[in-house]
Amino acid sequence: MASRSDDDLCCPVCLEIFKNPVILSCSHSFCKECLEKCWREKPVRECPVCKRRSSKADPLCNLALKNLCLLQERNQTASEGLCSLHSEKLKLFCLDHQQPVCLVCRDSDKHPN
Image (cartoon, rainbow, N blue to C red):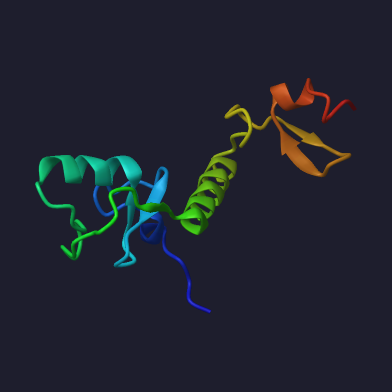
């Protein structure tokens, strides 16, 4: 099984993790906003990577990539010791759910004990 690098989840235009990724017919993906910006700057709608012309003015959402990016962001947040729900520091451990929690989680209905 091939390993996935973080570069696979980065937009080739902004070089950040994809935000609202869209896919072109050439199979290249971009943040929707990055692609729209590229297309505003040029008279022809083409792929910023391979220069193939796009027949669609409104490319499809790349849902699989969007989900992968969300998982990556959650994993990064968790590895930094921050709650994926509240972006607060994980200071406690819930014995009932066997997971670290922040103070906001502790006060929520999900972790009453």
